[in-house]
Length: 330
Image (cartoon, rainbow, N blue to C red):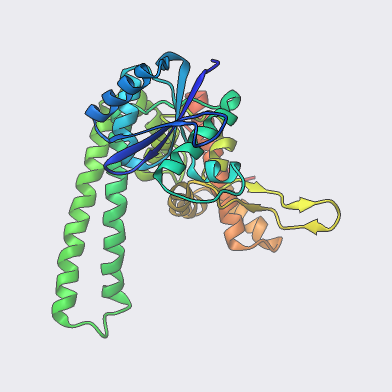
């Protein structure tokens, strides 16, 4: 779709700075500051109408900002308004050297990016309420696991220097954390089992050796139930697992390595899955030992195992049948 107007939004917790792009520059562009609320969103539409800006021929660009932009995106979708949520890193590095920074300037930069990249701009669409709920539960579980790790360290590494009362409190907290994690995982299971599509893909994903509840749900959440990603290689790239070549001409020959521009949660959580897969899958165990004999580093081999797991998960989902374990490795 060809757009006529381009608007950049800088999001904060309480307010939104919005700029209607003008090619003559920031000083010519129209700007408005509104509350980050439903009343503010309605004020935005009135402002556009006053400027004779057709909403249907407009596109909004905003940075991925987590929960602070969620209500705005819901409002956009309820009113069939075009928008694109873009990586802040991509916007920052696409505009070259810039001077000055405040919310108004940032909103202009985003609107400028929106206009410059209009032809290849990919419009965004929120995941379903159920997938958003799964994402929130995963985030909650992650926070508890981090707190759990601190107390586990107290019980092991700092046991000799910690008092008995301190150790006792750590034990109580660990028991509580375990109960909370179990509750969250049960809630996740209920959400998945209530939706046939989620249930089917979850069962297919967990049929792959090494993939458990957490990683299966991460696949579902970050791929929008395998709708935003249908290619395992692209998902591996998104998760920072796919390696890239670093070379230029004959003088620059860097090592092939993964990019740091990735969703690190995917890669981190696949670590335990890869360990389990190597232990329980004869084929991957044979692969690991072969690469080890070739002199490959442990981390490099495990990253390759993670990549294989991603490919397998997408293969079973695209095929629609569970993973079949090989009788013999080879």
